[in-house]
Image (cartoon, rainbow, N blue to C red; front, top):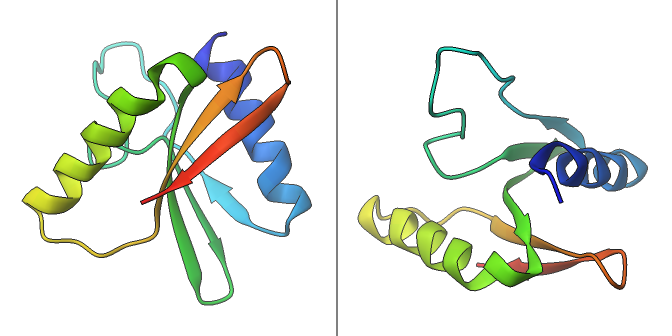
Length: 97
């Protein structure tokens, strides 16, 4: 499934949970559009912040490694999640890191 469709489904879920979400918009000439080169969406709600990496269910372990590497390298303790879209069940598998 295309990243745009997965992002749209994620944003719908976040909005239903009263989260305010933001993602960087695509620009033709820019190769990298991720937040910090890792995350696809940042969501905030009152005093909570979530950094979300989106992927398909098949790529979830690779994305988990990518996020964990970034967190370790920068010595960060933030609320990071990997959301893997399960095409068959039509829902996200969410892994909190």
